[in-house]
Amino acid sequence: MLEEKLTHSFQFFEYILISGVILKQFSLSKYYQFVSSILLFIFSAFSFSAPSSFTEAKALSKTQVYADQNHQGEGTIYCGCQWEWVGKSGGKVDLASCGYQVRKQQNRAERIEWEHIVPAWVFGHQRQCWQQGGRKNCVSSDPIFGQMEADLHNLAPSIGEVNGDRSNFSFGQLPANTPYPYGMCRSRVDFKQKVFEPRDEAKGQVARVYFYMHDRYNLSMSRQQQQLLMAWDNKYPPTPWEIQRDNRVAKVMGHHNPFVTGEKKWSLNHKNSAEGVNISPVSPLNQHQVIENKSIVPNTVEIKGNRNSKKYHFSHCASFNTIADKNAVIFTDEQSAKAAGFELAGNCKIR
Image (tube, rainbow, N blue to C red; front, side, top):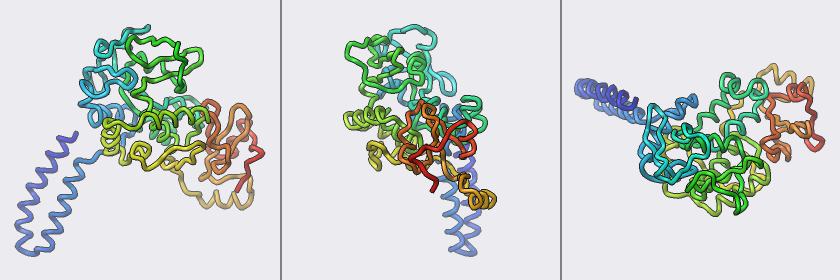
């Protein structure tokens, strides 16, 4: 794709140089303006736009972020294995390179899969689309879910079997006597407790990705998970590769992970920026409705319900960001929350 862009750009530039000679005879200032615009056009050939789908995101992760990392660097995120690229975004894992032993699924253990560090279930089930049809429905009907699913900051190559075992489990610090089920790979899982502990080399990175995703897309995180990830963030600062990875991803996505660059630092009960949540302005009809009936909240306000308490909270309320991921559900408006059987929390009022 890039080679094709450059070919067209340089062909166009040759044409411009010839045209520029003619232009120069008539107006030097116009000539300089003309050349400046062409240089801007050529530089734009080197830029990439954020992916519009998970499929595209995987391909861009390969070509723009991890292309040279399959035989060097830190390897697969949870085990540190090397791999050979196969197809547009797949790969065949060199299990011996990290002393990996297959736990159960030989075929899946031998292939590269793209891990959502913050699982699709975690950021998806908080969306209303998930309640109405799961991931498939979210992909087809919710643009914000699409942005989250295709966010390169949240993707990393993983051994398929480990990716499957991690599932949508929370990260945790397992007891010292918990076995390592993958040979020399230092990640482990407790299926009964539904907890996954990544190897030490990945703990800082996954913490900062969690902070980024929750901050950017206004997700809720339990107090316990916040405390654990804050500890990992402090104990395992960004490595040279994590910083380089962030720079590469930023060239595609158009923005950095501020928790890697140091622009932001997560603290308990962090207030999310919600920069990735595109909110449409209130239409005149909605404004009229708000004036007539204060129980109708304009669509610029996000509403989050708690499955356990059956209470819903506005984004300005104290409990909005403390609802555990597994219990949270997002509603587009107050009427939808009420229709689903939720009631307004007693400590949360309409502004």
